[in-house]
Length: 240
Length: 299
Ligand SMILES: Nc1ncnc2c1ncn2[C@@H]1O[C@H](COP(=O)(O)OP(=O)(O)OP(=O)(O)O)[C@@H](O)[C@H]1O
Ligand SMILES: [Mg+2]
Image (cartoon, rainbow over all chains, first blue to last red):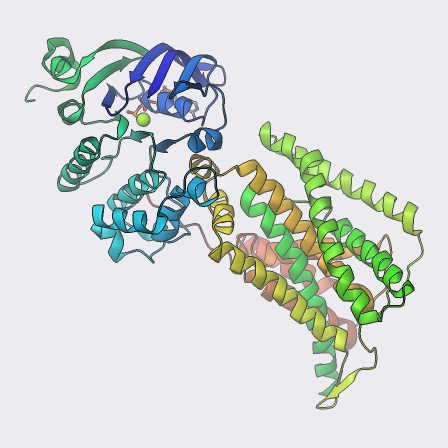
């Protein structure tokens, strides 16, 4: 499980997060919602070591990972599918997936059957199977998004961070992404999900946190938050 | 016509040397957007270490060819180590602090230090490097070709092919390509990207050291042998594109051949001119290099 206590982080002199605490219990799907610029991506970046936290404590399965470099954190079993996809454009789809399993292929994590897992990703995202030899940079935005998710799953992570997996996708693909998230949840994957579609995120999640200007403005079981009038007004629009 | 082909042959071998050194520039530029301006000195040191190793092995009554072959791994190991030292002392800090130009000064300074060390250890006078193969030229269709010139071409191609295969086939090579693509994302894959950058510096110096022991038998070895070569190879890297693998071979050949043609048909004193004109033209019309691709980016 993942435990964040009083996390303070930002970029240089600019502080973005002001002492936020989040807990992601084993096997649960927790979502972090909030408006643009609230600090959701910054939170995920601080957890996975892309930026160094200024204060606070982050533990992964009881081990303190605060301030560790991102490769060490990944080797401890935390996968992060970052905002903006960030696939390796000059490498093939298959190579991108293999790199997701880098710690497994280099003896830093239990190896298991990497080849079989590549096939599993192709079962999960059939579109990728057809394009397995294609360079990732030439995939469509939606295909790149699926590749980014598949690549993160190739770690066989203990905790998975997903930053806006539906960003820029057509409505039909958004549904597909959410059905995959639901499947991962059924498989008891521990996940922290950041989503622009707050209603859909609260629909699948077990628990939710609301971030506002770098501070937690609320938290609770997802079905409670979904019906909270303040949350509804601010993030869920009127219809939902 | 005979003359023309004769000149072509020497242009090709020098061009391949430029190509290998320029390939070394590409290796570090792709992973870290920095390069070693002491690349010429890495070549010098590689050649001189090779010279000492070869002479030692000949001293224990090995034949020239065996001495050369056994010295090669020593030279490679030394190149790896030398590049690692350059990265540790000159580049690492600049990358960490996102310094724009710190690494430029630092790698130039380290190059000067290495050159002074070479002068101190091996003296200032050029020394003959024992040729691993017969120095009598073969005559092919009336053109004289030295065996060493053929070895230069094959050695240079083997080096680049080897790295290309490593990058495509092994998971560690793919990790290098991933780091070149997107360093932060590579870190998220569990790749230690600082180690990858150190490794690319090692490999870069190894290429220069290889270039050194390839060219040494047909020129002379000495503390000053690398400076001009390093600079011209930098021009080749710009002409061929700092990001295009094939470009440096073509760029190297273009420069090597125009140099020897100008030297022969015009005036040896002007042999550096066409290459520099070409460099200026490329910089003004195709700044990414003749073969440089604009990166594939999707939004
Ligand atoms: N690399 C950066 N350097 C400086 N400031 C940054 C950087 N990245 C983000 N910020 C700032 O940090 C704040 C929080 O940004 P963040 O990306 O965490 O927001 P977010 O909640 O993910 O927003 P969105 O929903 O738009 O993705 C913003 O004010 C942003 O301008
Ligand atoms: Mg964001």
